[in-house]
Amino acid sequence: MSLSRRQVAAFAAVLPVTFGTAQAGEQRGRTVFIAGDSTAAQKYSDAAPETGWGMALPFFLRKGLAVSNHAVNGRSSKSFVDEGRLDVILGAIRPGDFLLIQFAHNDEKAADPLRYTEPWTTYQDYLRLYVEGARSRGARPVLATAVERRRFDAQGNAQPSHGDYPAAMRALAEEEQVALLDIQALSLALWQSLGVEETKKYFNWTATEQDNTHFNPPGAIEVARLVARELLRTRVLGPRDLRRLDEAIPESWITWQQTAA
Image (cartoon, rainbow, N blue to C red; front, top):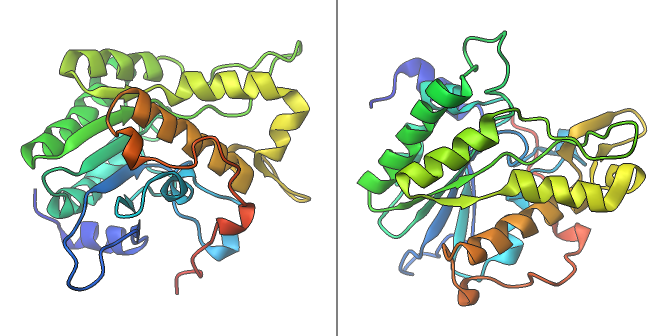
């Protein structure tokens, strides 16, 4: 698929961020590309302390294994494709690389035809574009169910918020024989273990905002840890590819890009 001027302009609005890029004269190593939404995306300084889990994932990967974070606020599996962002990834991805795919938060918005997908039809259809695109270039696709929001019932039980989307992704992963990182189930269990009050320390709760979808640095670090552990469990990566899985990560390691002009 070629890029239109509209797609190029849309892509230029938020550039991907790559950590661990090879220096001049060095052979390019493997790269983990991320296609996703605001829960994974690199944030700008004016959004701090809001933090995407993709910003913390490099802390758990060995040196030489790069992360190229193409996740963008507000995108669904459909709008990411329609804006040409998948084309950009497929133009850069190489044999031996990985494409980590996490969508659902914005696919759920039934009132928005530019983003909405139906779990068992169009959602799966769009996800297949990512899977087939990665495979056609010798890269390995990896599906990740959407991380859960902070939502509790009156009895303090963590509640799922993504409807049929996680089940639809699990079914597609089985059908297509794609590795699945079940971040939805793991994050729901994590929020349950932390409880109503403690989870506020992991989400973007500030003096002026009570955000139960996006993370602050501690939350992004812990979700990235879930992702890294799942990459090991599913044997997408081996023990030598990972580090610090059981170590504390300082919040000071998180950095935000300067606001785009």
